[in-house]
Every structure is written in C-alpha cells, then in structure tokens.
Amino acid sequence: MSANDSPEGTQQTGTHDSAFLRACRREPVPHTPVWFMRQAGRSLPEYRKVREGIPMLESCARPELVTEITLQPVRRHDVDAAIYYSDIVVPLKAIGIDLDIKPGVGPVVANPIRSRADLAQLRDLTPEDVSYVTEAVGLLTAELGPKPLIGFAGAPFTLASYLVEGGPSRNHENTKALMYGDPQLWADLLDRLADITSAFLKVQIEAGASAVQLFDSWVGALAPADYRRSVMPASAKVFRAVADYGVPRIHFGVGTGELLGLLGEAGADVVGVDWRVPLDEAARRVGPGKALQGNLDPAVLFAPREAVETKAGEVLDAAAGLEGHIFNLGHGVLPNTDPDALTRLVEYVHTRTAR
Image (cartoon, rainbow, N blue to C red; front, side):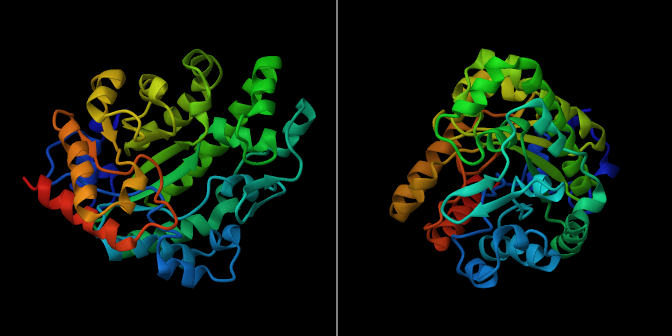
C-alpha cells in the first residue's frame, strides 16, 4: 500500500490534512511544507541548555527530554512537521550492542562485526527494549495536535557500516571488503538489521508517528550496481514491513545522485534529495509516482538573508512541476547555523508558496 492509497483512518486525528502529509501523498497543499533534518539539535541554544551534562544516548532514553527537544524547533521555527529526536544507533544500543557516541567522533562500536560468529550480537528488537520511545511519541503527539510527527531510523547499510568499521569511516574499507568478500554473510547482516530497523519504526508508528524516514547516510559511497545487488533488498524489506500502516515512507541518503531512482524503487513514497542535484533533474531520475523532499545546501544559511532567499527561490522554481514537494535542506542543519536564519527561511517558503 502506498501513502497515496492509505485510508484516512490510519493517520493520527487532525494530522491527515496537514500540508506535510498532503505533500507526501502528492495532493494539493495550501503552501509548500517545510521541515529540516537535524532541526532539533546543536543549532538551538535551548537545546544546548537542556542537554548540558547529559550524554547523547542517555538523552534519547528520557521521554520528557525527548519531547522537549523535539518540540523546540516547532515552537521556534513554525515548521510543518516535527522529527522525533533520537539517533540511528539507539536500536542497536537497546539490544545490547556495546557502543557509545563520542563527542566530535560519532558512534563507536567496541566489538565490530567481522565474522559470522559476530552476528550473534544482533538479537531481535522488542517494543519493551525501547519503551521510552513509545512513551515519548505519546507525549509528543498529545502536544503537537494537528502537526505531524516524523519517526525515523537508520537504514541497514549505514548501520552495518558503523558495526563493521567500528565507527565512522571515510572510505568504508572493512564494509566493502565484507560486502564483496563474503556476500552471504553481508546479506545475512543486512537482513538482520532490516528486521531490527523495521521493529524500531513499527514502535514509532504504533505510538502515533504520522510518517517515517529511513536515513541511509553513507550509501552514497556505493555504485548503483552494488546498491541494487547488495543493499536494496534490505531497505526494501524495511519499507514493506511498514507498508500496511499507510503512513508515508521517506528515503534519504547523502551523495546519492546516481542512486535516486533506486532509492524510490526500494519502496519509498517520498525520495529525499541532497543539494547536489536540482529537483527537476531529480524528478526525472526518480520517475513518476513519488514526491520529492529537499534540497537547499545547508551552508547557504550562512550567507546574507537576500542570498538565502535567492537560493531557496531556485529550489522552489526547480520544484514547480513536481507532483509533491516538501522543502528541506539537502542534509542536516549545521551546528553553527543561526536559528533566526531557519525561522526566516520557513516564513519565506510559506509566504512565497501560499496558494
């Protein structure tokens, strides 16, 4: 079932006719909806204040803190959707993987997965493992009212990359060595991660999330043939697992210009586009039947207001012929971004596209 076919009853009360969900379904909208990846986070002084002294993964396990952080950009910027505050490694931590998020580095895994025996680390995820997510989503949907909440998870390839490398990697040497050198072990690893990711998304949807986004941060490191053969089956399994809920499914990766058609083919209703490919060209690569999300370069926000509006206008012009468009950045909000620049950008897009 696609988002376009979903029955009205599957959405949270009041959110179904929101501009964001209408755009996901490629329906007419009162204005182009806007939200930002990493809109809740380091760019906001109120975020830094409430997170002070609290490790990242601990902050993700406190429902009231998650609620506050998720709501901060909604209050400040008047974005059209909230994105659940979490981290892609949360479900891995929840099933007992020995990992931590080191400031300035990222997720670091104590015992990388390099052999079949190492797969034993990856047990199934149950709702009880992440009961704090259920609680936080419930708190959020009560606060958000008609404004949708987007749930999210890391895609199997990106999670596998962290697990195999032991942390962030520039070249993904160990990951690719495993993928090419032991295709069956690689397939089994991604299949297991697909099940964990699916379970994590189901928890969020069942608690009240109105849409979900699958982040494949590192998949731009692959050629299309390798993606189709070695990665797409696992991502497609995730999208199939949540299809019957009828909520829109968004797929996003960085540096994925050559993969855009495949990202849609994997099962997404909405394909996220980074800033490297104009949206009209992205639409040609993706093909009909999908909404697009994106795609202002996050660094543009450091330019003067007039320049930001000029570049945002170019994005909107490129999106003019799309079936559905959600305005976003081409990646996450950069940590030193002026929050007021984001607020002004939301106002500009809303005003410029008002129907």
